Length: 291
Image (cartoon, rainbow, N blue to C red; front, side):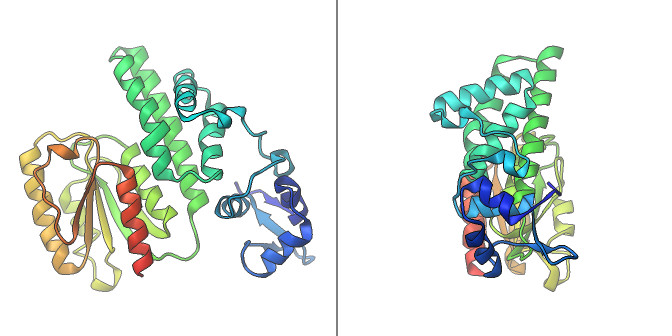
């Protein structure tokens, strides 16, 4: 993603005149750098972000060094999910990349992809393949593929200007990487600066990166992912107490995940409970618009 392309290459890729593309660049709508000779150059990351934000189609991806558009993108949602499952099970990285990044570039949000095809495929893999060594291998490889692609989406979504700061992770004894990575990427997609503390994050660690910070560097949002909860009553009490502390500090707390309904929490002015990634997405958008 560090490759640089010329305005002519990008114009050819999206079926637009080079002069129109240069005008957008001159108006600051497309980030460009200049060579020593004064020629405009565009990073692939900035080119793809531009394409996505403008809802453009990449008609000739080879013009900017990308693989051809995958015909699987034209499938209906059910067939798309089935095909993604098939390629994840087989470990077909290129096809999985083209399907998910392709949908992202064509306008799907990270939350939509996480709640839709990614969740559907990984849930099916977990349910069907059991706990034998071969099954664990398939599940872990599929999860790793999704992690790599979500990280790529996060990089594509990153902007220079950060509207708000957020920190978070999965609760203590929750080993899952992907849910918290998805939330972090959703926050970045909405203009936030996200610190993902990853799996197995005790509440005391979240305190260090939130209420224990100096007021001027505190995050506006702390997220907590809950895919596995070993002691729902204790975790509920910890989160409720932490949310009260955050309320005094002016920090929002968002809790969600597969097992969130096991928690005995009630929403409060600064405590939101989400059953889907779309809930996190909505809260991040609202936070960004309030800055």
